[in-house]
Structures are given as structure tokens and as C-alpha cells.
Length: 264
Image (cartoon, rainbow, N blue to C red; front, side, top):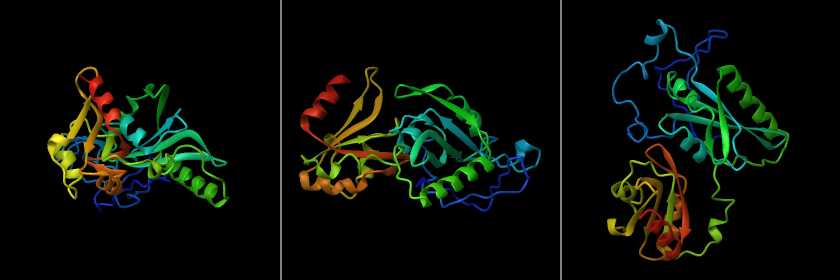
């Protein structure tokens, strides 16, 4: 199950129209709610209020189901697919230990479900992803099934939370350069400096990769003082910048130069 969490604010309650019982949030949220990378609310509005748009009744539980996900899909891929929305939980579905290609995504606000549905039939990698409305009962039933599947001892295959441990990053020789993947498109060098605030870096050693249109690609390369420093900085792998998980990879000067030349 996901490492993303749900925050119980004591103010927001949800129902799904089934038994009508109010339902609070599930686990402590791990995201920084003050961040602006996902356009999070700083004030009021129908998109972010709890019950005004529902005639005074608690709004529906904000959850959608994704189908057709690649079998090597990670949480970072789902976050990128639903970019712009506030994701509070991602639950990958398994059957007999195998990833089914489905996942439940809990959103922060009920009206964000409509925006998520607009992503229906968009592409992740080379696959069309279907997006469906779901309910609280379906979501909690899926959680129960996952727990049961885990207790049965079924080995997990596919839909990993992170590729870091499976990609052998610890075995790769460090050259002092790290590649960052999953950056918010609005992130600049100052944000990257803040992400690595415990390390000595300068802006002229940070290289944001641009795509063919000259726009940020979501990747960047960072040159550290030495290989020891870059290896130490790998503890930041899968940490968040804004509301995005950032993946780190040991890299080389050649890989960096090749990536930067494509955006020129």
C-alpha cells in the first residue's frame, strides 16, 4: 500500500451517498500543504470548500480508479499523470501477488474528481489510461483485499512504489553528478538548491534539462563537489519538492552533456 498519507484536519468530512455515514481522513498527510507547485488552495473557493456546493451535505468521498497502468508503474508516474491535482493516497491493486494495472487515487477535494476524469484515455508511456469515478466502499474494500493478499504471503510483482531499490542504484559508481527526475515544471535552480540545502552547491552547477520546445522537461543534473558528496545526497531520493516525489540517479558527464544538448 502507498506511503502517501491522508490528513485528518478535523474539518473535512466525506460521504459517498451509500450509507450516508460521515467519513474522516485516514492517515497523516506527508505533503507540504503550503507549497504552490500543485496550485494548492491559499484561500476559499467552491473547489476547496467542504459542503457549500452540496446543499449543506457532506461532499462525496473524492476517489477515482485508474485502469490500464503499465506494470512497471510507480507512484511518481501516477503523480505525474494527475499533475495539477492534490493526491493524498495511491493504492495499487494486486491479485495473487501480481499487479492488476489498476489503482485507486484519493484526492484532496471532491470537485477535483471532475478534473481527474478529464484525464481519461490520456497516455502514460505507450498505454491509454482509463479513469473512473469510484466510491469510499470500493476504496476501503480494495484496502481490505490488499491486506488479505499480503497476509496470504503472495509475492509482489509490478507496481512498485519506487524503482530505486530495484534499479541497483547503490551499486552504481558515483562521479559526483546526480540526475533529478520528477521536478515540478515551475521549479527553478533556487528550489533545487533548497532541496539539497544540506550540501554545498552553487547555481552554476545546476543544469535544468529543456525539451525540444525549450520548456522544462522535469529533469535536472546537479554537480556536487565530489563523488562522496553525491553518494551522500542520495538519501534525498524519493523526497518531495513541492508535492512531487523526486527520483535521484547517479549520472556521468557524458549523460548530462547528451541530455542538455537535446534541449538546445
